[in-house]
Image (cartoon, rainbow, N blue to C red):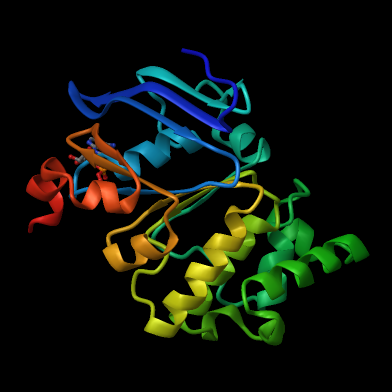
Length: 247
Ligand code: ADP
């Protein structure tokens, strides 16, 4: 059924690799302003689901509608320009550039990394860089070399490099992996703020962190949605305990 009230409407999304269905008829609806967490055992299809949404992997069936635009047939670059930002597990910051420069080159101007570095700085970009730097707690580090930041700060910088493009949908793969307790707290606040006026989907394994940030949780298992709802609901679901939380 076509439900136009959701920001993101995924229906019967499927991909098979040599006959193996990594994602198998997944339907998922995410509101504007919602932070959805996807959990599930290794191999459940969580990463592949995000790959399908951002166009990194082509589905073999089903649809991904974002504000009623069908994304699943668009090239990855068009999806990014259409407001979808994806952060992967491995950082992809430019270690030799400063924090400011990393954010600056991520500003969508279509001139490529080196082109935008040597381009005259304009006030609008500079203002946006400062705004994002405050949001990711790095405004005091703008002139530092990004390679010298702490692990947590690098993760925030990477989130900032997404925010520079003002995405309406943000997809994050284990954003607090390897972070300290304090960094996790700050990241929880950051993610809650990012979700305002946007939609966010996070893959996460740390159940305490999930409890802290999730509006709603989707549990995946063997390529399918096994359960969905509030954390309280899914963590007491016998099916979820059996395949995932009981271990
Ligand atoms: P999760 O993120 O939940 O751990 P993944 O989405 O990474 O799970 O993987 C789901 C399943 O799909 C795994 O069995 C994985 O081996 C398989 N898979 C993922 N990508 C590919 C691919 N490009 N080719 C073949 N199999 C893949």
